[in-house]
Length: 461
Image 1 (cartoon, rainbow, N blue to C red):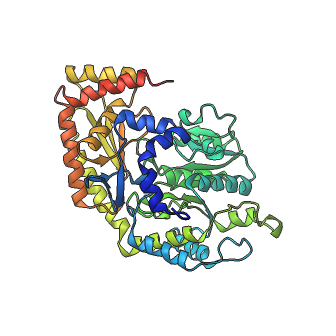
Image 2: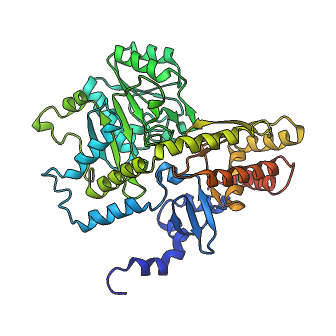
Image 3: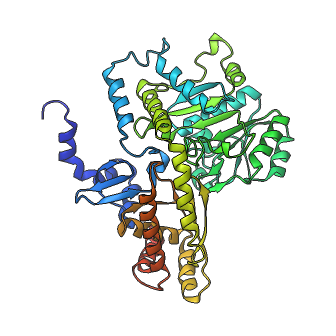
């Protein structure tokens, strides 16, 4: 091999993928995948599907944790990236103003007309970090409020407003921020009275468990915050760009106009990492208050040409293909068909969500036989039943899904926004078959449950 040949390298070494991860990366990832039977080898992907070496297709209901909003390898986004590479732009000189960042900011702001300016970074957690810094500087206050069970990222600042102890444990000290329950206006008012709150960061639909903000909460929270000269920060990293059936999830509630909005994931087109923090003019002008402060907050790869081209292509596709309306229609179809199964299966307790962000929650059954099996799983570890559903969906029906969070009996569906009735039919039929098996009183599914219990009890090394 002369020089670098990517195709030859993958042909020669691609089969070592799990061993390479075990030796050089996070060794627990391949271990976990082997344990639950997710150690597949996918050869290619397009749209909402993967294919293995045998040509079998797999339906993706995970979308790379929401990154693949347009599915994989959308031709418009691919062409934009080829075009920007072929253009050989003088990118990232740091001492000029390239057109693509301005054009993408202009386009994004048309979707949030009450906002004025954009900062481009490289990820969702960086978009949140930017919002936290800007809120603190603009208000001159130190404290951020957030919701229990929230997920805003894993870097230190965003981890400080992450509502899950499992992510925070061992990484203290963090910033002195304070959690409240989603929907608890009394707690919000009580914290604001202390006079040191810069802002309140909130996911309009919490990713963990798929819990939408209660009706009226965001509007009332905004009024309280502004009365106390604090800011409303909407984390739309996963919910933004059509995921919930509106361009931004906060737009489900009339009158809600956050001061700062964080986006990422789907804006990338699935290719180039990108994050964006949208905000009001006065906030940006306070942060960048003089030429001396021109680089007070920046990102080395922020606003790079490839990311900007991908973002512009994504927004163009969303408009041309009416992605938001499609997500609203398909999401309602999927949610309603799954909700119709709640009365049929005693292990199925709730189906909720907005657009193509849907949570399927399982709970304690009533019949004695099922209850004893459920109790066995719960005694070992809460969340094992949901994993028992996820595994046969992949192994038997070739559908990739995820458990919505640690110790949760909830499956979260966040498929590519391009899916339609064919994919809804396939998922509902597969899910019904898995539920029939689970309620059959025995069989492979409960055998796998016992395997999960054993794996959990012996997992620490």
